[in-house]
Length: 382
Ligand SMILES: [Zn+2]
Image (cartoon, rainbow, N blue to C red; front, side, top):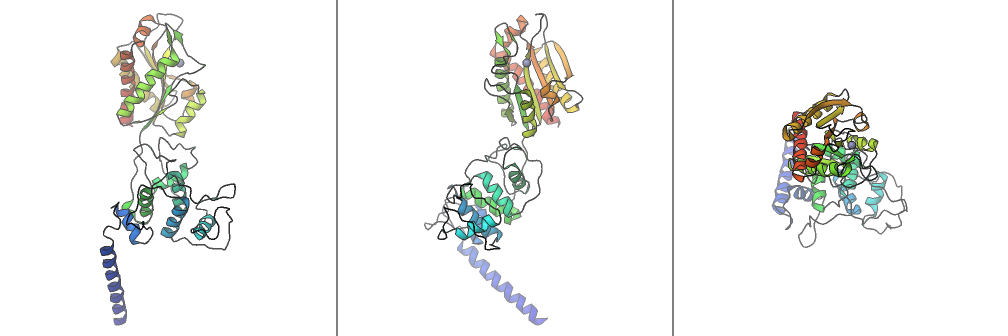
């Protein structure tokens, strides 16, 4: 019993003096960064700097460098003697063993042409895949980025890394998957895998899809000198700006005079996991007497109905137009939409008075503000 206690004290003593030495020696190991995560990895001998005492946190990092750091951090070693011959990684390459190990553990793959491209800069998306695999992450959750739809090749890796609190976006709504990761960013992410204190909680942005109707060869309604495709694009772009100003991430079906199939507009909603879909159209009738605004919603869907009602009420209040109501409809963009979906008709271009108003930029701005206001009310209520 006494012997054991003594041994414990000795071990504690050693650890304490080592720890004191380490912290005294590395109060700020680098002249160009004081990030706690960088110091943490330096103290664990997982990363180093340059001969001049710098870390160069804004420099990019290569595939080989990233692999060495991750294997070092996760203590990953070669388990068999399987050798993969890459034409650009000779046995004499400084990272030869780490690259062999990385391929064995499926952390990073080579390219189809027999190369590994060890000096290629690694992107944020590739870093997610590398670190996610090294940590054998399995947990996913609802993770939305405006630039990482579910169809993105790295969506699952980015989702797992975000769910684990290891990785977050470059802004409230963007992940910037194709951007080269910096040494500083990479160090922060690796430190988070080892130390829960550095992890971050991601808050999903609200994403709204604004769908300007028609486009290109499909002009929509044409009357009184107005073309629907141009009119609704102008209003949609104004809605986009107004929503962005309120901190909402906006997915635009189109921002130019292009053509999209109806089913593809609806598919975007699911792929980007939008919180609301709003298609913008103008009305036309055989009689020039028809007038007013109306908003349609996906039949039988309460959320879609709520969205349409809030848009319609806001629009009627702001424009004082005739209220034709919020009503169900089976339009393809609504019916095939998995998200709360509505379609707003901003007025009749076949009605001379309404067309005249819609031709003025001030009125179009009022319409856009009203629709944006209705959408924000919906987001706040959900
Ligand atoms: Zn239309």
